[in-house]
Length: 343
Image 1 (cartoon, rainbow, N blue to C red):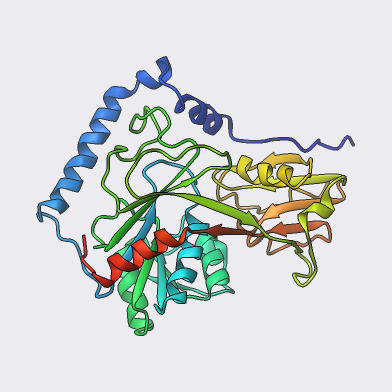
Image 2 (cartoon, rainbow, N blue to C red):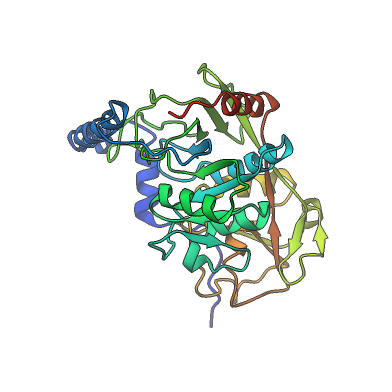
């Protein structure tokens, strides 16, 4: 039987819209009436909270929301991990709340390092394992925050993984993360990638771009650097290898994240020339897609690896990524928290 070659793969409809949302072509202009309706609904809902017609809930500790105004992954999860570690370094006891994409929960649920991704979501599990901070998931982030604080009364600051549009949860600081696509064509859904206008208020902006580009001239805008560490073997995490040691090998790289190309670009920068396979974000990996792959090594992201529960492989190596936050951004967050005002 002929082996299926490993190549780039993405759902055609997902790839189609990603391309269309980068420009203002006929296909982007066609649904603009629906985008106007979407924008009006979003603006009305936001105004109701701003005017006090809908109540924001102060959970008793300051909340930092890390989110985006665009659809798709931009690097929020590594940012949350880095922010938790930064807050802990200056004396805070942080906790994390999240929707938990794909999580099968209706009530606030604690995430432990042994939780199943099918129950709590892949990103909350990764955050729990990397930070060892209390993490709770629930579609209602207010309920998640209240349950976390009841279970962990020593927590004195919460970081919300996403939830920028979850206005009911009062927050002290909003950090919006973009990647190199920024706001795409600038249109709201479904004509473009924006959930809210680019002009939306925020306390700071992070730009996650693998390219050496100038930052937009926006107030309090910072570059987000993602640094990869030594790869570790899935079968034995104590075994580690610098990425450069995979150069010249027959390597396959696979990623089911918001922007797989960023992961592949990181490997190429280390001198690796892998065959690549891009899966949809939050891909479940119910079946092993590497059984018939011919390669010396298979490199995957941490977010993918936490879903490899039912199978292992001596060729599978996990590449960790660490977000590096600018000290001036951390100082800005801490200053706002210490002079706390819930928005």
